[in-house]
Length: 382
Image (cartoon, rainbow, N blue to C red; front, side, top):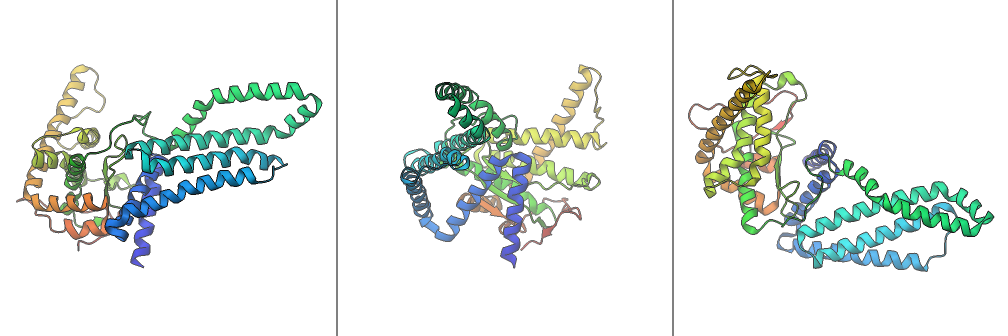
């Protein structure tokens, strides 16, 4: 029963991520979760299992194309337009399966994205062909040569519009408008992987500053595609704005700064991994100050002086919580290392596994645990 509940929560988390950040983010999170399960089920043999699966995908693509060549030609519209879709599926299976063996990991993700683009264009072209089939057949029966000529011209026009089709797909795949293209970036080195694990562990152990762990909490890293999601830790936000209290905003700001603090504590320097955290911190600080907490803050400054004063207030608040995060990480050095080892090993750590670690957090003198809103379901520390 517990496993079923955990599976339901994970599926819900993936769908929530896909709705809020795009289908590609949900697919990426699913891949990370699947890879984590393979590590747990097969241990050191998980790579061999993945290779067998990819070999099966490659062979399946070849079989699909061979079966299509040997099949009797379809006579109806639906059968005819299904041919380009089947060809696209076969080629995608071959490309993804073969790419697993011959390409660097980050480039395999590029192949996945291009294959999705190709499948979407093939589906759009097949749809247009299905809609125009009866009219074009009548045209061909009346005038074969002009019909073939027009079909050729239309094919060129549709091919020219393929990027338009792809951008419609991308609006569904990636809702982060700051990411307009998946750049061919390098995958994480072993040192980079360890740094990201430490960074995310710094965030994750902040759950120990609360009274329980939310059921939808998780921490993960992705060693291949670092243009979208190097690592991620959920920060649950109540839907009811009245439940976003001062103490919960303060905890969120501390947690947001804890990743950079962990990097600085363990490596003596900070990396670009914290750029997203700084942007999130600015949003949290703006909400905190706008609600009347802390310094005087003008939500709608009338001049540059007001804008500068707001920026300075946000900067002071950011520096304050960066300092608190440094203190917290220093007090929990060993616990942060333990969490990082688990994250680096499994790549995906759910709420149950997290609860077994963060319950041992040491609170600095004078600190109090933050409570969760009633609308946030939680599990107790283990």
